[in-house]
Each structure stands twice: as C-alpha cells, then as structure tokens.
Image 1 (cartoon, rainbow, N blue to C red):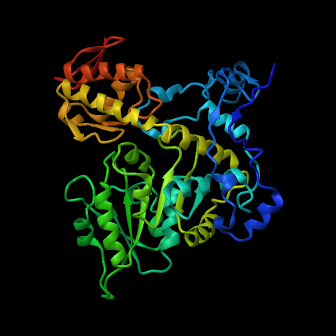
Image 2 (tube, rainbow, N blue to C red; image 1 turned 90 degrees about the vertical axis):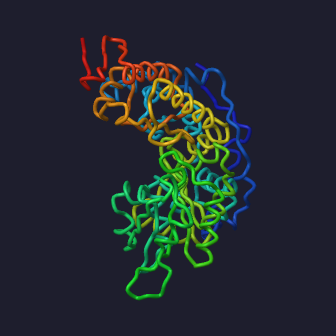
Length: 442
C-alpha cells in the first residue's frame, strides 16, 4: 500500500525555524521578536481522493477496527471521514467533530514544547490569529472557559473590583463561579432593556465609576458576541468601548461565537476586536476542531496571561496536536465560508416552523433558532422525547445549526414540526397529541 501523504502548499516540516533559533527567541517571551515570515504564510491543504479511505497510510478498515476495539464496540464507523451523530444533533455547535483534513494536519504537525515556546505549529497559529484580528499577540488556551478566566485574572490585579456583564453571560452562568473564585471580583449582572443585547445606556446604569469607598469600582466590562445567537451591533460595541476608555475601564469580549457575527456580515473580525483589550475565540464551537481556544491582546497581556494559564494547569507540551487542527478549522470553516450556509439553514428552519403556526422566542440572526415550545403547547421533556423518535438530538427549544448538520436532519425536523404543531404522525407510528399533551406510541 502506498502511504497517504497530505500535500501542503507550504509544508509544516519545511517551514520550521531551526531549534536553536527558537530557543533563543523563546527567552524574549515576545512573539514580536520573531521573524514572522515562516509563521504567517497561509497554508492551503490539498488532499488526494484517497483521504476518505486512508489517513497517513492507515486504511479505513483498520481505523474502523481500531475504533471498535477502543470503544468496546460502540463505534463502528470512521468518524474522521463522516460527521456521524453530529449530522443529526441540534443541541449545540460544540458537537461538531474534527475532519479528515484536521487529522492529516495532526499527523504532520511539529511535536515540540509550548511551555518553553518551542513549538512552531503553535507559535504559527498564535501569530496567524494575531494577524487575523490585528492584535499584537495571541495565546493558546484549552477552552473558552479557560480563555475568559485567564483573561479576566490577567486584567484584575487586586480587589476591590467588579465586572459588568450581561445577566445571561457565559462567565456568570457556565464557568463554575470562576470570576469570583479566581479574581475576587464581584460580578454585576445587567438585564438589557431591549431584551436582546446590552447598550451603553444599560452599562452606564450599572457600572461603578465613583470614588465612593462603599462601592466596588468597575474595572472590566465583559461582553459576549454572539449571545444566544443574537448579535450585538458593531456600532453599539464601539460606543461602549469609547465610554469605557474614557473612564479607564478594561474591555473583554467572550467571542466564542464571534465567528458567527462576522459571517453574518455584521462587521469584520478586526473591527469587532478593535473595541476590546482582550478577546477569547473558540476553535471547537462551530468550527469543528477537537479542542482549543485562543486569547488575544497586547504583548504585555500575553506575557502575564502565560503566568496565569500555567497557574491553573493550562501549559501544554506537544501542543501542535491541538493547534494543527485548530488552524485547519479556522481556514476551512471560517475563512472557507461554511458558517454562512449554517445561517441560511437556520432561516429555513425558522420559516418552516412559523409556516406551521409556530412562534419564536428570539429572532434568528445567526445559527440559532429558538422555538417557543410553551406557545406550541409542548413541554421541553416531551419535545426532546419526540426528537429522539425522529432520530434527532435536541436540548429543548434552542436549536443550534452547524455546518455538519445534513439535509436529512432538516427533513426529519420538518416531520417533527408537523407532529408538534399539526398533530401529524412521525415515522414509526409516533404521534403527538396537542390536546392531551402526550406522546402516543401505537
């Protein structure tokens, strides 16, 4: 068998800077001291048709046999070449799975130490994202939660201090109380008056800018874009940023899904990131990388953030296995335009639901569709059960569309909508009775 070899326009191997030079440069702790040329060249991955059957010389049958072995028989297909369950999963865009091109990049990556800043693939990704966002520096982190917490801990040096944020934000509801436990900061949750996104007027009512010693001064405004699929307009973020700068308040953005706002045409990546002192971007939500996020800011921010990252166990050794896949995810999914197709599919689903008389809890702006299940007369639990009968994975009325959702999933969803809103039968003699509010299996 002829081994499969991925073809790169600029090989990972031939673009490596000599190890001695890397070691010397790592002592500076500043990416700006590096010659960026080897790192900023865009690499386009081109594969032979055999990529669907082999990965780095390993046959598809061998991969599937190994998958079956290490999962005690639970996995029988090559998930690297097929979306698998993700094709029918609307629970979140975190369910996207890595692709065969990501696996090929992992197999070809450098395997040096990122704690010592020696790994070319990781340094290349950090330089690539810094250039893409027009920020001086970037730092790899393992997750969006780690990215937000490292960034906030880097900014918040000593109490008393408070962080103003949306009451629905990830840093309040989904990060295990990290803001208070890691920084000692008080969070000030704000409810947007328009019901969609925070405005400068909302911020002004809640931020503490006085010198009154009874108060906890606001040191950081942390925004999230998108939040629940809703875009905060660029103009509004620019207003908030200008006011924050005037009052010496640091701006942080949880941009795990900022890719979606940019893909919608709401503004460019550079324009949005220019409003903030630090931004966290996620490689796995929607983009399909197996793991990883990145935070961007100044060189001084990156230098201190490395200390904070290390203190919570975020230093990686052979980080190239993470950053190689992340690079492909950004190039193929974001820069390749796949997110826009997800938005189009979300609007199709919205139109189908409303055409059958369904109502929405939120407008569709990006890749999330919010069914008003209460108005439809069905509980979250019954909707999830009915989805299971239709062969779909659901998590309630929020449907997150991602680029690995297939057309068949939309057709199944159409039948589910008709069952919920029109009382029609699903395949398998499963019918939802809107009168008795029960699922009947005949």
